[in-house]
Image (cartoon, rainbow, N blue to C red; front, top):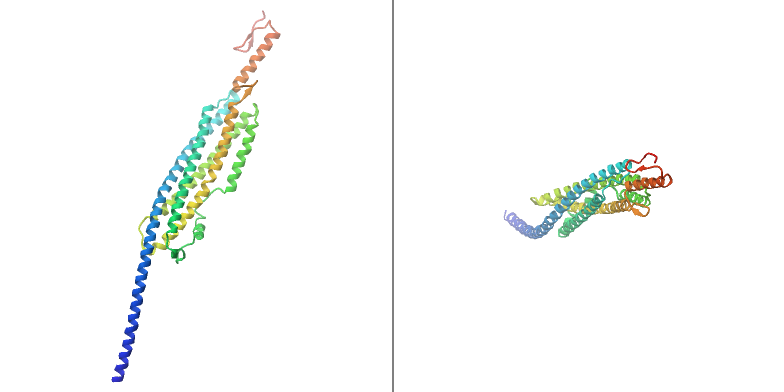
Length: 328
């Protein structure tokens, strides 16, 4: 019994010693984990601040899109009016398009282009803030179980963003450039029919710009939802999901930059066409003088009357009614 008690004492002593070591390891592990968690939460807090800053730029980008869409709506209405006025010009023999209205339409395109440029700037700043937030994330988070890589986050976005491919937009630009050459070479007789084609073409491109703006607004709404979630309540179990959201938000902002930069290319080509049409209409000439189509017709009738008067002096011409009077 004594030997058994001694052996049991040794066993209990060894067990207590190992238990003490285990307790120490647990305490050390807890202390290390606490330090890591403090560091992680500190880094997440900094990332949180960057995301909060990016939200302001996102709101600015959304407002620019809304303003640009409203101006496109006005431009669309005006090009439709120009079409109708040119149709009337064919029957009235007088150019009905108001040159001041065309100048206003050209300025609308400039304004839309400026708003899109501002929107691009807002999105670029948003992207920069999000990237800074990602850089402040703990290094281990990039390889944590349940988190995505940036490439995986980008793949996740593929189905969220419908957009017109760049190659197609370039085709639209080439179409505008081709038309610009046509209107540049238009004669007095062909200016009106080519002008009708031009206003119809510009209308279709304004519709395209509006589609691109609406896609951008939809994508910004997705980003806003992500940011709103990010700025909500946090807990440890939600961290992997929040980190994934940050990667996705960054990919969204980068995508939006590429998406938006297509629009100025298109708008600049539209602006060139509108300016060429404006100059062509303003510089219509007859015998070296700028004239309206109605003036051309009036001058032609006047010259015809002068010719008849000189050759048939015994006939009186009532120029107001363009009818022959009585023989003297």
